[in-house]
Image (cartoon, rainbow, N blue to C red):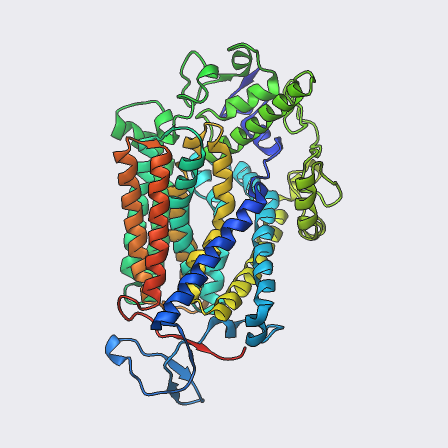
Length: 593
């Protein structure tokens, strides 16, 4: 039996990727995710209250006054009639761009804001469900139909799958709220991805992980260019059409870079082994199943050889998974298959402990002689509203998710199922619409929370929204890192941020300035955002420097180091927005909305 990465053989890469049960990774450790997100919001609220007590509050009554801030180079005009404007000493809150809330501001301050926090957390869960179960699946089908190479697919469609919430939050910030919540979410999420994911994996992985210098260097270099371009463009607090176009063109350059990734790696390292290009996960973690000879991109990988490579011999399902975590496949595919392999091993351990003969089952999906039968739900499957999973915690998560699962079951075809496989484009369109709807409600709730607690929109984006959209990926990376596959878990954290900056910001800005209203400008309301982006650039430099000084090892020391950097970033960003160091923002108008 053979498996060939580029040709359609009996068990092709396309078939296995399409049919193997995916790990519902974003819903793992749900309680931990909720606690972490709420703790970030609590920290932002505490700092807001503290800074307000010390005279740096960001809420005032919206009374027209003489322009006192002209020497700062910032003037805010509020329309009061058809032909004239009246100056105000505060910025209009973004809450006015949304429908009226059921509760008044006084009622929210008396406790109703807790309902909005719960609603925002539920929208985070809804986004995780629709992204994992429908959106990413449809993107994989599109990649298969377009016959994209692994590197290009990973840099485009797969990056879009993992960054969809941030992208839609940015779109809502540009076209609906006309504020900085979208930019704040992108910046905050970027810092979170770099610092928190690496930090959490370093501290809780329980082992030292060797990182590959080439992938870190490649993505860090391009990411640095992206952040520098962003700083230059938002420095004058406005975005024009050619600036947004440059960001989109830069991302096209990144795709080309990924297309010729192997050639560039050979040029800079002087090696022809593709392992270095995408992270040599075979170096230590899978040494026991490494084939005796090195395969090139066009070679045939012998599944039978891996099945009998070391005692105990692997059956076909497990051997197929182990082939797919070799460097013949894209990093995201390898990460997903590694997660599946981890669950398989855990099932074997549980069966052995119960005195049951160990049988390799891939999510109850047997692959014999290259035939993949119709998907059957796992006992702990959380994707069907009509199948109650086993286990107390799984039942709790299923009950919480049930309204979302039922809604999506009747409105979006699941193209992972054979009968709906032909409708992958319909799945893509409908799941995109639901992501847009959930993102709208998410930003709406977060805007109300920030308005009620007196926290500026950009701070809510950098803290609460960024944590809500990025914590699930952090937990997924931690689960894999604990099993010794940490290089996979962190290899794409910087690369995914390139998508966030260049596409998450560039595309909405380009649509606004070139399509919706040609020649218009997108205003950046917060001058402090420039400083936050500079801090973002500094965090990248300090992180890469720390990894280099630590000899490319991800361990407890490095984890503590980058988490401290994250705490420092949040503190400085909040203080900058609250005009602690210098005046950058007018306060927010407060009325009883």
